[in-house]
Length: 254
Ligand SMILES: [Zn+2]
Ligand SMILES: [Zn+2]
Image (cartoon, rainbow, N blue to C red; front, side):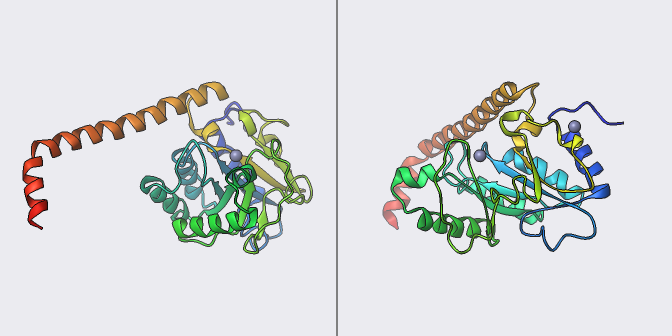
């Protein structure tokens, strides 16, 4: 029996399992080759809050044999995608068979004075190196707030905001701001058309009854991560200070 429609991983699994009976679930890179004689759903995930919630969703999809596209930010104020911990998570996403895309913000390039095409080309190269996969898909962060017309570097083959994916050939549904505009995805699984579903994993993975509570959960999670790291640093410093005279002697003797 279907659970009540809410933003939980349990319901996300139900949506995918139901959809998979009559539609082909895929990512941007494969949406043409994956097509058999039934409609296609492209699964798009924009990562605005970090990689940890994405990994939980990615594992679930992997278990169902589904590959999605995870769009990662490189200049977020909320997470550092190039840190050692994040780069491990990023590689794990790719190893689970998911496509990695770039979630870009044109206002960033403008603010730091980078040419848009050059800046994006550098970001695509870095993200490809981090993921050990070619990155050819991009999605714009906060499209309602940034209206700049942009011209992409040549390696971009899929723009998530290409009109065909936004209510052109593909009906577009999103969970933006943790609220559906047109009802839950599970109410939109017609076998007569293609879809592009945008999700932000944090809404489905974090605990909470609504988007505010889910962001409160992110505050607690992020604080815990930072607290643990700083506590580890304190322990490390204490160990170093106990033996500092020895370390100094060894260093001078090198
Ligand atoms: Zn539902
Ligand atoms: Zn975004």
